Length: 540
Image 1 (cartoon, rainbow, N blue to C red):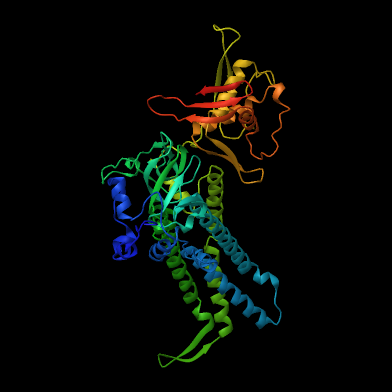
Image 2 (image 1 turned 120 degrees about the vertical axis):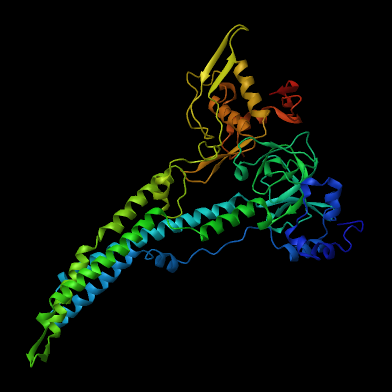
């Protein structure tokens, strides 16, 4: 692939059968050499431009399919897919027609005659608006699944490195370089490690908060996602180390693409909730009862608008009064409307909407209003902990440091449970009066650290997110709460627009020149920094 005659006949081999597109090749169970041969590529050169174009014709773009959601008209009509609502709608239409008819007959239309149908119509409209609004918001929120995909990738093609290639242009066989903090753009087989270790945070895919160590060694073919140690998945994040990878799956064939497809499939095959079933049963029973009663009322009063004479034992001379017939029909309709609980749909919708709002405040997405009632009926909930019962964030709770002598130890309680540097403070902290021990803690936490924290969204409601290991991100936030000593407070941080200004200042004073990555044997991370007093080794 690429140079050196590596790509001859490759597109024919890859596109010859359906296996190429679905790619049943278990890259995680094959060694690096077999993977390169399968995708006919060399990591030093990558794919050629012509080969990339050929494969794009086979595989398409590296992006999740955008499923067309229901139209506004469809959402509105779905709100009337309820027996009780349909009964109210029919009653409102009949009431409106009769009020109009009476106005025409009497020569003058009274606005009060239209109050009842207008009130029913208003209730139905409000009910539909709330339902459509809730489902529209839920559909938009589900689109957030696409946002976890990477936008750019560092790719090797034609022997040259392309630093900011749009991730959607990746094709199977591309050689990609990953670094700390990178969001992985596709499912890829790890070919080689640039650093001594590589760790990836897969919480967005598996729910496990602990970063997973990756290697180049092949594993068994039948392992689960968590066991595929030589594969990195789209939508996850590199929290430690650098590596070279081979793209094996893109778009909807990735693991996150399969999740996306399952969500859409589940959305299209939803069953009625217990509440909806009960309301439909109630509506059908109410329809039958009201229909029978109205018919009986109308039949009982037949003698008032249909009369006849008995001649020779047989009815003769029939007389029919359309006006009286209409009058008693109105009575029957009025009885039906009175028997229908007009406010029930509105009350139910309001209660469910309030429940949805409370759940939204806890970051729980409700796609359809009746689902709230279903959740209320549950007795046991089997849920993953990370990101559900917990926030998948870490924060420093206590800071312990040496005192003025070797026998003294001091501790400080740290407030805050998020990555927001302004969330809480350090209690009884000597602001600006950091001695040498506290300065060393701040320096190591800031410099011997590959994590970063940034604000998602520019408004005040924007939350803070971490790139890298949660533990290291928590240490960076601690540095911000510790602040700078007075002698460094005047140090300029111009040109830096991030939120970690204190950490930036420490890195500016003592610049990192080499890194000893964390590994399981050494169980520590070290960095060599240069300063005005010479080189130093900082160990964490």
